Length: 269
Ligand code: SF4
Image (tube, rainbow, N blue to C red; front, side, top):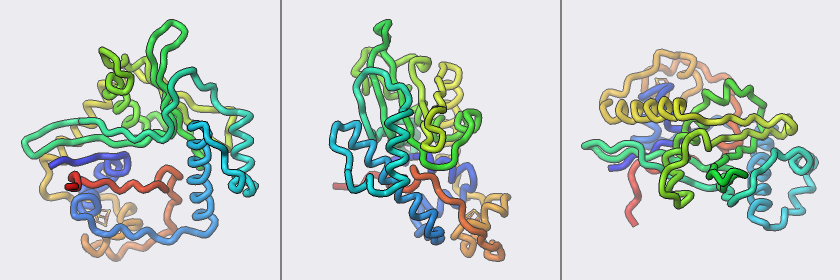
């Protein structure tokens, strides 16, 4: 048996083990509350913007019809004017990566992530590097918050562990040759670049392995103590917490707009 862990699954497990079990192992339907029309429209635009940048980095023509939308056009113009400095190298837009994490007597644990853009190459000193770029159309966040986010920790850790295969190199990249840049449409001249380090990677990898070990050892899937989380959870009836009320849902980030459901076991061909 193999279990694949994405950012969504990691955060779900850390928030409530029962929710992780019901949603990703029992595969109970996860009904999303309807979003406000405006929020839904913004998410759709965010998705279109990602597709637009993917086409751009693939060298394809940008969809002229998409440019008819004023907000999308303003995001595109902001990108054209203030795009973060991109290093020379091989451009890999919308790259999906799966990285082995842990193997136990019960099976394998894999990490999964999709990068908006990965650039790999060599710098002016002929030293190999890998740089991730992530496009954001949501509310900007400070570097300190992004540094703690599981997206950052997961993506950088996966890249460090998979760099040898990606670069077809004799050895993995040192973590300090890896970085991620977040670029926000609403603050286009202030990209957030987070460098990586060996110490950060050791910590991230140890934490990821500890989570997989905990999943491997868990059988009772305890309920969270955080009742505020239950208020937004569609599984209240399964947990006897149906007295909770549903406040308006937090709008997901545009990254969450993409299909994120991952099989916990490979589907046989
Ligand atoms: S209702 Fe609460 S305890 Fe039950 S799965 Fe959801 S978050 Fe966890």
